[in-house]
Image 1 (cartoon, rainbow, N blue to C red):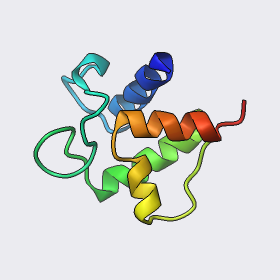
Image 2: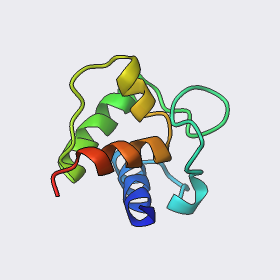
Image 3: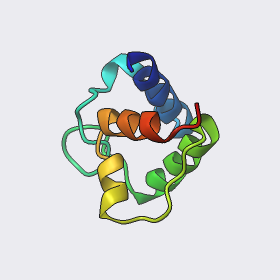
Image 4: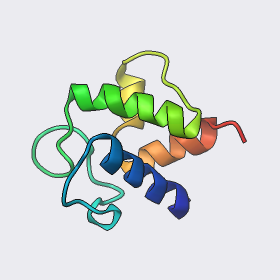
Length: 88
C-alpha cells in the first residue's frame, strides 16, 4: 500500500504542478482539500485529480457527491478506494 500511496502523491504533484513539494511532504492523513492543514486543493484541482486518477490507475468516479468527497479526503482514503476498485 505504501507504494500506491507514493504513486498517488507523485501524480498529485505532477498533475497539479505543486512546486517545492515532495511525496515525503504530504501527510497520508492530511486533508487534500480546504483551507488550513493539508494541501488546500480546490474544486478545479479535484477535476484535474479525478482525471489523473482515471488515467494513472484505471479508476473513475461516477458523480460528485458526499461519497466521492470521502474518497478524496486524504491520501489514505484515495489509496483505499483505488486498491478496492482498480482492475488487477
